[in-house]
Amino acid sequence: MIRTLAITPTHEIVQDLPLSAIAEHDAKWYWVDFAEPTEAEARLLDTHFRFHPLAIEDCLHLLQRPKMDHYEDVHFLVLHAIRADKMAAEEVDLFVGPNFLVTFHHHPSPEIDEAWNRITIRRKGIDKGPLYAAYVVIDKLVDEYFPTLYQLEDQLSEIESNHNHDSTEKLMGQLFEIRANLLKLRRTIVPMRDLLYRIINSERIENMKKHLLYFKDVHDHLLKLTDMLEATRDMTSDMRDNYISVNAHRMNTIMKTLTVITTIFMPLTFIAGLYGMNFANMPELQWRWGYYAVLFVMIALGVGMYAWFRRKGWFK
Image 1 (cartoon, rainbow, N blue to C red):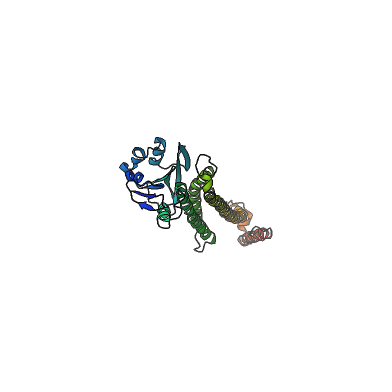
Image 2 (tube, rainbow, N blue to C red):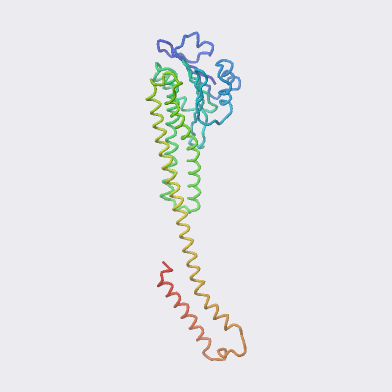
C-alpha cells in the first residue's frame, strides 16, 4: 500500500495523491509511505524516484544494521523498530530529500502511523519540512524502546522477588532468557545511538542546524536507554552469580554432610569387617560378652566422632 501527503505553500494538507500528480500541486514538500508494498510498488523506488540501486537493495534485503548513507542530495537511513510481543527488530527505511520524505517498511508500523497522524491530524511541524517529519518518525520508534525495556525490568523484578517460589532451575532459565532479550535490544539500541550521533554531527544534511535540538533530544533518549540496558544486564549478571553461589554453597553443604557420615561409618565398617572374617583363633568370638562389647565400642566411637565433628562446626 502506498499513501501520500503533500504540503502546499499555503500549508494545506492534500492526501492520497497519485505520485504523478504531486508535482502538479506545486507541493512545498511531500511524504510517501510504502507500507507493506507489493513488488510492483517497490519497483517505484527505482522507476519513479530513481534512488540509488544500493539503497534500494538495502530496502529489499532484510535485516540491515541501523546506518546512514548519502547519495547526492538524498540521505538514506536504516532504522529499527522493536516489537515487544516477539522481541524482534523490524526494519524501517527512510529517504530524506530536499523536499520529500519516503518511508519504506515491510511490516505494519504503528510508529509511522502515529507520526503520520501527528502531521495530518494535529498538523505538527507541517511548516518545518521533510527533515522534521523524519525526526518525528525516529522519535516515535525510539519512544517504543522504553516499554520493551521496562517489561524486561519488571520480569527481572518478579524473578528477584520469586513470589511463586519457583525452583532455582526455572528461575535460571528465565534469567538467561531475559539476558538473551537484552542482547537483542542492545543490537538495536547501540547502533541507533551511534546513528543519531552521526546525524547530529553530519555536515551533509541541509538545514540540520534548524532541527539539531530535536535530534539531540532523541540521542539523549538513546543514551538513557543504553545506560538502562547496561544496568539491567549488570543486574542479571549479579543475580546469575548469586544463584550460582547459592547452588555451590548448597552443594558444598550436601557434600560436607555426606563426607561426615562416610567418615563416621569408616571405622564402624572396619570393625564389622574385622570381626566378620570368622577365623577359628579369634578369642573374642568365644567370649560371652564379646558381641555387646564390640557393639558398645562402635556406638561410642560413632557418637564420639559425631560430637567431635559438631564441636569443630562441620554441621553449621
